Image 1 (cartoon, one colour):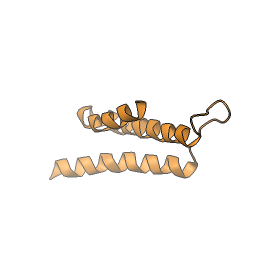
Image 2 (cartoon, one colour):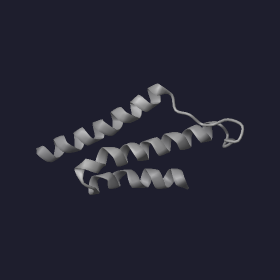
Image 3 (tube, rainbow, N blue to C red):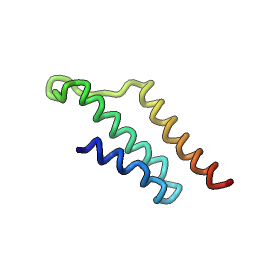
Image 4 (tube, rainbow, N blue to C red):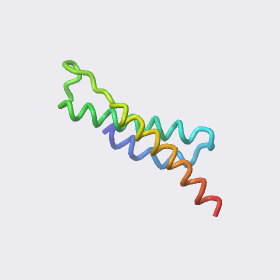
Length: 77
């Protein structure tokens, strides 16, 4: 259910001020990534903590900034 809520909320980043968009986008993408990590552990977070690799974190940051830049470019046209 939480996975669905994060994905449903991602487009809402376009409704907040530009200062907050990247932060909220990154929060949402990070939340989805952590949920996917928990799922890959078979939901057994008592035996092993979910973690994101440095590469995954960099990918999330890139996508958040990319989405922000793309939305600015399309508005300027």
